[in-house]
Image (cartoon, rainbow, N blue to C red; front, side):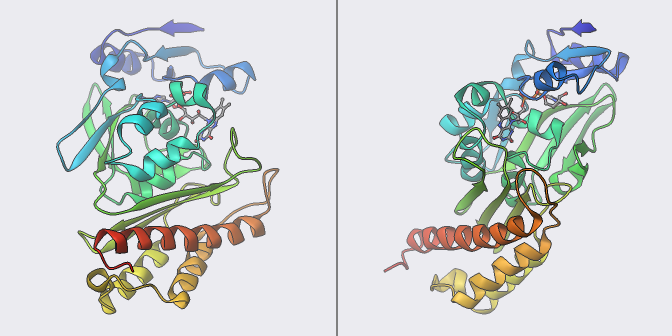
Length: 295
Ligand SMILES: Cc1cc2nc3c(=O)[nH]c(=O)nc-3n(C[C@H](O)[C@H](O)[C@H](O)COP(=O)(O)OP(=O)(O)OC[C@H]3O[C@@H](n4cnc5c(N)ncnc54)[C@H](O)[C@@H]3O)c2cc1C
C-alpha cells in the first residue's frame, strides 16, 4: 500500500487528483479500525496530518469555519460557546483518546448514520456548509445535500473536505444520545435540537435511526408554526404538554430505523420521541431564562 504524505493543502489536493482511490487519513480512528479488520484495502493512504490548516478554526462573529481535522477535544474546550450543540455531541464521542484524534471531517468522510456530529450539524440549520475542495476549485455543499446513503456522501473522488462552516448559535442547542452504556459507545440513536430565535425557526437532527442522518422536517415546521402563531418567541410562555408531545411524535415519524445488534426499530422510535420531548423542554427552558420570562 502506498503512503502519501503531503506537506501542504495544495499538495494534498494534487495527490488526491492524481490518485482518486487514495483513502484520506485524518485522526485515523475510523480508517485504522477498517484497515486492522481488513474491511478496506485501499491502494494508497493519503495522510493529511502534516496539513496544519486542517486543524485550525476561525470565526467572523457569525460563522465558525471549523477545519476538517480539529479534534473533538478542542471543539469541547474552545467552541462550546459558539457551537454548543456540536460541543455537546463531541463530549459523547468515544473516549479521551478518540476525542484527541477524531474530528468532524472524519465523521463526515465516514458518513455513518451513527456519527455523532451529524445530528448537531443538521440541527444547526440548513446554512451549515461542507467546504469540499479539489484541484478544480472549492464548492460549498449544504449539509442537507451531503449525506447520500448508508456511509455515502456527496464528495467527488478527487475532493477533500477542507472545513465545515457552521453559523454561530443564536439560541439554546441540545444533543441527546442513547447507548448501551454511558461511554465509548456507538449511538443506538441520537437527536440534536436547536432553537433559532433570530429566524424564528428550529432545527432537528436524527442520528442512527435511518439510512442517513436526517432532519425531522415536519416536526420543525409544526413547531415553527406553533411558536409563531401563539407569539411564544415574544412571551416565552411555557409550552403546552400537547405541543411537546406532538413534536415528539413527529420526530418519531420522521425516523426509518432498523432492528440491529444495538437496538430494535421500535425502541429507536420510542427513544427518539423521548429525546425530542426532553431536548425541546430543556432548550425552551433555557430560552425562557435568556429572555427573562422564566419564574
Ligand atoms: C473506540 C472508538 C470509539 C468511537 N466512538 C465514536 C462515537 O462515540 N461517536 C462517533 O461519531 N464516532 C465514534 N468513533 C468513530 C470515529 O472516531 C469518528 O467517526 C471520527 O469523527 C473520525 O474522525 P477521524 O479524524 O479519526 O477520521 P479518519 O478515521 O481519519 O477518517 C474517517 C473517514 O473520513 C475520511 N476523511 C478523513 N478526513 C477527510 C477529509 N479531510 N476529506 C475527505 N475525507 C476525509 C477518511 O478517508 C475516512 O473514510 C469511534 C471510533 C473508535 C475507534
